[in-house]
Image (cartoon, rainbow, N blue to C red; front, side):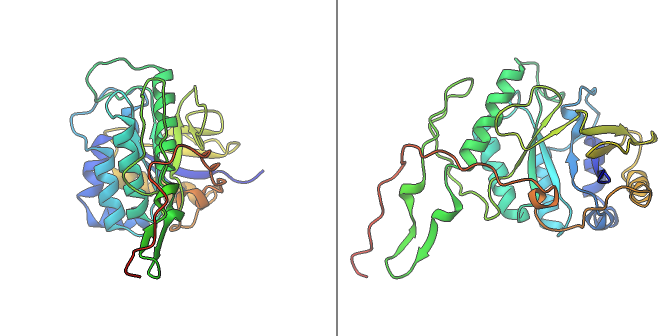
Length: 280
């Protein structure tokens, strides 16, 4: 059996600590971990901490200030509309060169009380994937001979129903590395999900406990009172004891060996076929 990979799970206070320390950022960026969950306490049922940062804001900092570390933004439709999520996810995919992805949970512990159902989260995950694929990166051609920058007829409406009726398309193109990795926390994953965290395959292990070795991956999760430095030191030790290092750098999808998502079925074109510029 292939040795499991190691990932990290950071809570709100850890995000504050990590982004405030150049030395911790350097160590994190060099660690051969598969990925880091930015704000796992939002969706794992934990009590909200005293301090936290928005997961996507932290991701933008990491994308701009590091080169190799990979990460998952954490979100729930209880707090974020899928269209806004998709726009952020696509933007982070461009900024990080594919090192980022999205982890969807049913309920955000930091959000105001609201309806939070598995069906609602499932519809949000479907919407994010559909929207990110609604403007294919391959449609951007930059043809100087015709003056056509984008084959705009390839941009399509998503025409979604369910919990989040959305016509689309997204107003940002798909990243060059393709649609971002879409992960799900816990039970109930369906549809376009690439990765499930918190199941029997990718387990969450508290820092200080012995991680299992008969799984695909382990997310080593620090408690709020445990420091990022302690987590990184423990991760370095675990990686030296039979866990599979995943070379830092490259896209999250390639690091995990995940196949490219299926292309979105042809939809209703959002724009007409572009015509060459008359002066060319």
